[in-house]
Amino acid sequence: MSNLILYELEGCPYCAKVKEKLDELGLEYESRMVARSHDERTEVEEVSGQTGVPVLIDEDHDVDGMAESDDIVAYLDRTYGDGAAA
Image (tube, rainbow, N blue to C red):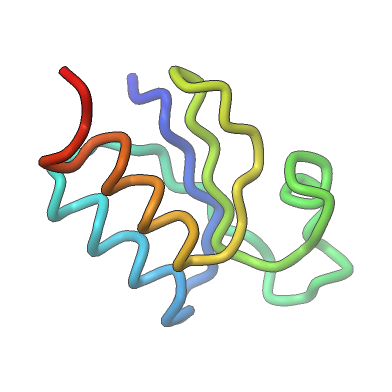
């Protein structure tokens, strides 16, 4: 089982951007779909402090609730991309 968890919303372009990077890097991840209504996104709010998506959790690197697609993509590149430490 993967230690990467992605909170996402179907049809979200920001989530799609993160999923494309995960796929590009060949990373397995657990997808957790959130409700359309921000009021119903209690689980993602508990882990990230906000209700927006995408939100990434990386248990292997103590990342709990990273938000903002650009930040997540940059993190994935640094941590798992070509420049990552072996």
